[in-house]
Image (cartoon, rainbow, N blue to C red; front, side, top):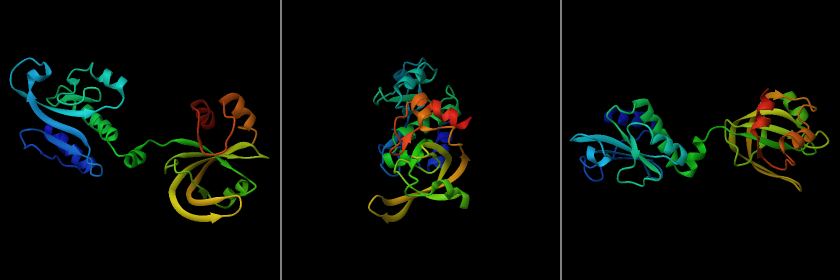
Length: 245
């Protein structure tokens, strides 16, 4: 399984093992940017893990940030507190078939994410949902989508491509009117007047329209605890379900 794991990592993460102490003393897998380890493959004595029998066994050390999930994993056969590494954050997984290859690969993916740089983590994070304000005094948003399915919109750095953007149109409408998807982000843009400065925009694609009476500010406040929409903000789970119904 050792070679299968190396092949998986090379194909998915374009990374090959390094042998800083020689090939008999462990293979290190690193990120290309921050050079942090995300896996350490070793061949160690079975007694070091409290296993019966003589001889050695291949293992891989992986980082798990979620402590609760780590504790759950340690209940599984073939997974142990990390050998020769921080046992609070790392685990040791047998590579002798006790743990299925697919599960080992899933744990490698988790370790890769846990040890990634902040910039890489931002790119790897799952899509999020945002409520973004739209002021009709500055932009005729109610008619913008009559002319095009995709428009440019002022971007918050928190919004990434693939995120869902719900446009909340301010007074006198005061309601969520549009569900959109951010299809392109970080587009340089220069605009400034006495009330508004824009340096970066995103392109958003219209997915759905809502009637003004469907999600007015009063409902957002009373049912979902949203008391203001002054900038991009997350969407509560209950509101997310309602918006998708």
